[in-house]
Length: 137
Image 1 (cartoon, rainbow, N blue to C red):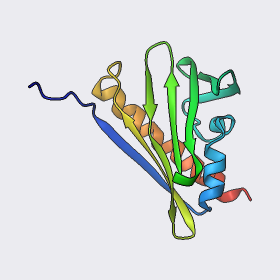
Image 2: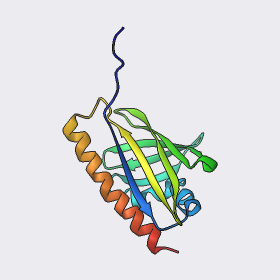
Image 3: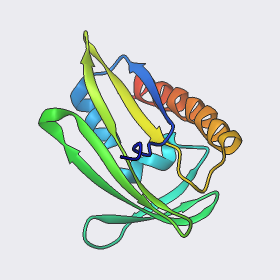
Image 4: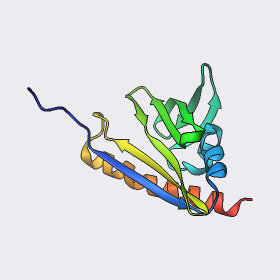
């Protein structure tokens, strides 16, 4: 029996001083993503069958939410000309606030250096999300 192939992964999280409901509602709307995913996401607009057309710094892509409010699931599908993958994401209660988590699996099109660089950029986006949600009513 051959060993199972697995991808390298990294999980990023941010603690938010807002309620789970507010965090979920904001993150579940892809049209809000250019406000916080400032490194990669330039624009998002509704398309068909639950998909959203996106413009990223790498070009065009598509995003579809696979959300479930009671479970705090904000998983989403991503497609672009290079690859497609699922990103598991969650909003979980944290005292009076919430924690948002995303897990990224290294796609075959990215080498370790590129994956590490992309993961570091997520820190910038998580900080922007925190700032945005905590300063807006």
